[in-house]
Length: 429
Ligand code: GLU
Image: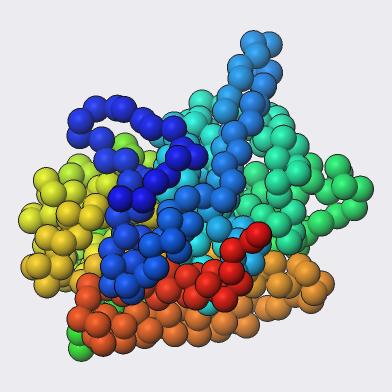
């Protein structure tokens, strides 16, 4: 067992699955497969820097609330730290640390020169006004000024944040350093150096790997029955692109519940409905209601969990009736559930591959920002397509060559590249 002394222990309910322990288990599994040096494993098991800052925020009614804002920088062996900022009530330091580690392997797997990071604040953004969210984001950014930078650590959107928060971050950073710095964040609005195609990028990446996996099974996207848990940025983009490619998206859910239509949902209409109904799909006409739990076990070809972690566990893994599970969220399938799905021959496209489209186009946005040359959407989508298909093929090849499940294959590729770089660079001093 490796030591992770930088992070405080948590002791919630016995059913609690610690995301950091889970991330370390995946790392250790890859390390065993690679016969990795124990010393390298020890280094990679720990984040390089853990920052928690105090964010005093004046609420609209005058009350002052103090929030904790985290930023965890896991590893910068291959390049600057990179990763999203999450606003969600379930955020903890251990979760943010696990997600930072995942980012390291994800970037290495798809071959972009970044290390992993993640940030988060434990708030439900729906309970804050836009003005309050702006004050929170700006204060959080200013508290992190010394830890972030276009060649140091580049934040991006994650659950609960979007281009709007990135614009506030970019502005706060730029005002403090005295000039506009587009490369400080990715996922920004187009008007300040965002990239075409970034908003749909994670969903597009999901669509690409699902399409490739279907092709390997001898199937086309047309007519494929797809079920999607989560209808936020990623879930809705994947739904729309798969729908446009001819798939039948038969069920979709959000936190408040889901909808099911045997013949397939009209995804553009569902998107418009959710936009008008506080992002909920409940009550959408021409569809039946369905719970999140029922949705995960519907008979279908492709199941896309695009919401929170730990959705497919030992409890429900044996009821999953999909041929392919594509992890659009981070960590939606637990380690044990993944083993159970593997044993049943269900293909699990792991998160660090399936949802890498977002950070790939973040990288393309950063490159455009640094060079002050901006591309059209076709070029962005072509580069994304190339990197995603290439990474997918490598994972399949690694899985076949070593006779290991896809997740272990993806981890061995990501971890192996970082470990190689670490051993080439050596340890300072
Ligand atoms: N939050 C996204 C992820 O988990 C994107 C990160 C980024 O673009 O830096 O991959």
